Length: 453
Image (cartoon, rainbow, N blue to C red; front, side, top):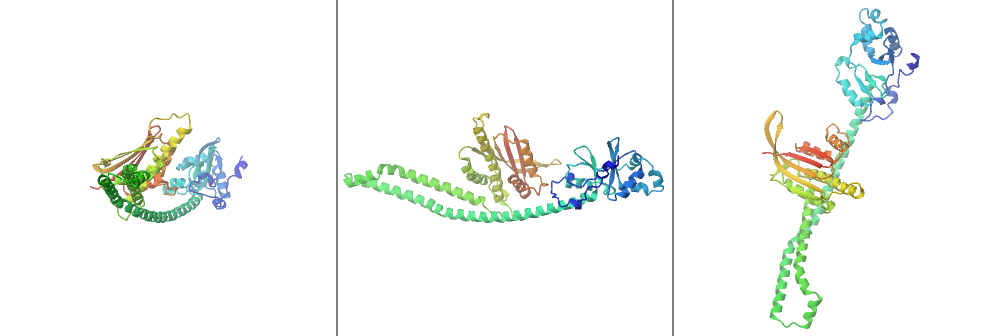
């Protein structure tokens, strides 16, 4: 019976398989596991002979009529043997008797457990159990043994990978920040160059309007003083369509004024969006910040999505305005994407009934009072910015993915726009970013910024 599994007792050591790629998601299944089992009726002498023959064997899985009973480690058997009269008392005893005296807590994990997670469980044990091997349960309900040195070696290798990932990520973040700063300065310079001629147009429109009105008054005065006009004058008036020109001139100037005003606001919004924050926060107008972003995303909406702004009375808020521009851009862009995707899905899927309700994003701001903690009854004042839409909502899988991206434990994962927004609100501003979404009821983001008294 024993010969059937002796060949599987010793797996390849970690040094022999270290050429395999381990990453942050690697599990215990990828580590060398010892497949060594004995019936509990076997004697302690037989186990001692196996331990002597295989010096790297960390322990044995005890089974009773093929069913898992427990694990007895090499260290525990050695403790029994070195006691006074230990060999005489335990060598000839069944392993079930020795195991009953052991009473050592066994750490049992699934083979799907991540290596770093298993290392955390192992380190939480008391010091006297630090070298006790781990029992690993496989998918086929088999039990194997993992030695602590093998787990330590794999864990340190993965920690090195994690450190390298953190380093590469920080380098990439630095390059991205430098690129964004350079791009922001470039866009700001271009916007400034556009704003100068727009200012010239805007500044001279008043004079052009006044001059044109004065010239029309002069022409009308000439017609009143000289009622008998020559054929040449009549022909010229017909050629230039003077009556239409006189009526349309003011409208043309008004259109030019409106276009210049829109272009001026757009360029100003672009400058504010590319604003580079200073070291310390400064008081800013939240409503102006939101309006700037709405103006920038209007080109994507094209009248298909209605944006309703219900602004309350907000005092200036100390913040990093450039970063808040990025947060509002991320959240509003996500809402626009979801609503546009819903519209396309309804258009190409005949089974989905088209709702007569127009896609809508509602932005509500207010000042609220909220308790600091459950143990502190005092209230603090917060600026609340709610951004909600009437989309079909998000799936549970997508919601879980977004919530997990907010976790500070996922520091080596690729950061998305919402995770970056969460870091800006909570880390840089000491605020809160709440998120909720239900199917067929829409999605809502609530930004809470502390209001200094």
